[in-house]
Image (cartoon, rainbow, N blue to C red; front, side, top):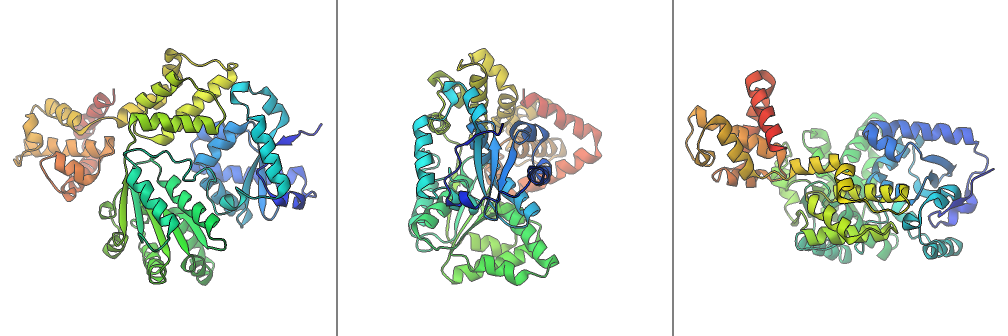
Length: 480
């Protein structure tokens, strides 16, 4: 008996589905896409989120994936849509909009706490009947339709960056151009960039909005060279009205790609087109990035995203829970917000585990003890990333039997300089602090000194057993 599919993303293309494609062909196509995804994510991630996915329909414009429940859809759209789009592009040789469906059986098996609201289902059905495409365009652009300004929770640590992005979205190329957003992993850079792109594409019909990661930009550039399609490649990027490039730090050490992007940047800037870039660090701290690119990245506005405070983290969790149509007790949300501080994506991952636990236990909320067990690996990783420079300096000073004051002094004898370099190395490895901030914490040294210390210790770890054992011991002590 064929399974009944529910919750298709709204699309007027439903009547154009290729009914002649055999199920076996769809299975083989998905197997190829899944094979690419296996190389891009960890085995645990693939087994958790992609193993149960099936390809059920395919057209020239879109494909439809069958998911066990709406949690799968939410998590894939929130975290892996770009990787999935890239894998689809690689296998099918053309972009397709990604849509999801749920099977009737899987929906009925969900407890009420995690089932989609019937009212929302009716609204989705009405949208489908009326032919609206609220999510199709965003997905076709490689952007997650959930990443809009309304879904972004604003707090003291991201207010400036959000305001800058909103200003650019309202008046592209007239306010801040280029706009450079930077911050640690999982703090909302991609969300804000995609919010800009979706706001502009929705407001100005016909605008050429291009969103891509720098890694994909590099891969497309290499492919264009190999297939002699550079003219087509340049046309795609140099004729864009809005160019959004994520994780620009990956252009480091890629000389020819930097050269190509330099000319693309100049063409767009001279043509008064908006450029938005993101990175995990400010332009001046991206190693091996050409000086002329650094200077251009700093022409406009640079905005930093910092770790959100506890109140903002609770608000983020509440909004995510509402988006997934699940009910989570305030005490659980508070526990997650207090224990997971440095990474919003990790915070969402913890919420997903709680939602999964609740769905498998008939709506029962986990106790504190169960939460500790359920999130053991996440909490351990979070503890590693909550280490402070002061803790590192104290632990290193104790280990090498030097004064704490020597960590920040100008003295340079070997018995002091090398422990200080190890402390700088650990600060770079175990904290989210920028190079300049690390240098400041070690007596006002510049970022070049920190980079030198990091490189020196890294080389010694490879060559000297004593250094390797000392660093490993200190790492384990600090990560407890």
